[in-house]
Image (tube, rainbow, N blue to C red; front, side):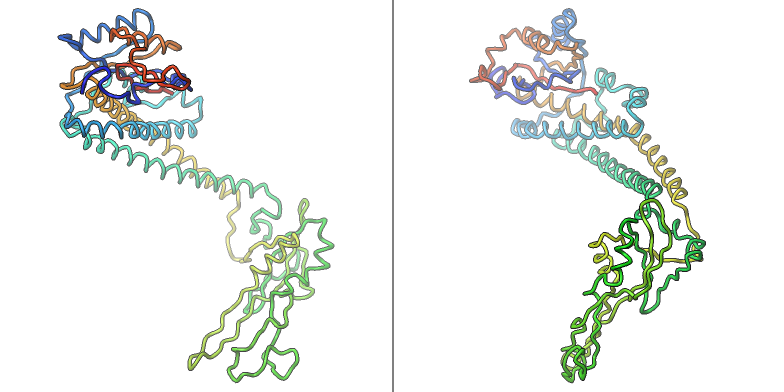
Length: 454
């Protein structure tokens, strides 16, 4: 691979003239070739001369152990993937930062920021040292990259599970708090229909083989309508035809098979027991009634060949609930058990709140522990990416200096010009065909990777 124009521009060496990514950046990772007999120290000194003396950026040289080059084909293939891996790991880093900030609050996150081990991310980056114990540098680069990605994948999966658990508990708490302050349509019925209220209203909660008492919440303005129509709700639900083939009101004709031709639904009606509505309690804009309905009915069994097919039980509750909803009456599920100990909504909310706070504490501790792992992995991938791009750009054997630049705000363009001067080239000489057109890309003969710091 030749230097300079020997290879097409790569993403890390390109700068779009459209929407610039420079607005939020604070650090660049750059590599410059050691020309001629120059040592890395000489190249870095030249870099500092062109950046620090002009107050454009602070430069820190990074020294990393020798990495295995492999074949140029493998490097080119890896180069195409490293950009995606770089972005994917950054996403995990940002997720941890965002989750931490959401849990502790923005101000607290600023007062107690996440660190990489004992140091802030900025210092870790500027004083970066390769973790040979965790990422052995003599492994083939593709294998090394997969090792890093595997660790980050585990971190991301843990974060996902913790986030889901915390979100579920938080949503449950919010729903409970809404119920706690809700009206009769939302309030927990076990706290509304207490034994004293039920005894005072004289209502009986039936749950027999044939009858069931259900609870209906009605807007006060619709109470007269309810009393007028409740006995006719769901006129197509209950089948009242019987197996009397001698009667005109029967279900069908005697086929000698006891059911195959029977149609209970020839005559239908509401499952509501007439006169069973009882006003129990009124609160705010709503009033609560109970009403007794038929529990359900069996579909007749029949014989198929020599085998008897058992009939099915059809429960009326869901159909009655749907029919009542069409008339804007709210049927609520409730099973009355006078011996059951009732846990108040407030007690449930207090218990859930304690669980939420416990999970938040666990999340904070987890973020503080694993942020450093994810950030370190990100920087290691950046270094590998810089190494691969440098070998492809400058040629073999690897002979370049690796540095991190902390940019002075709004000096990005001047820093790029300074780097061009270090390379002793005119950047316009490396512009691709059509670079003077809108949205075209400008090529620079050095490797530059952006590391955004929040």
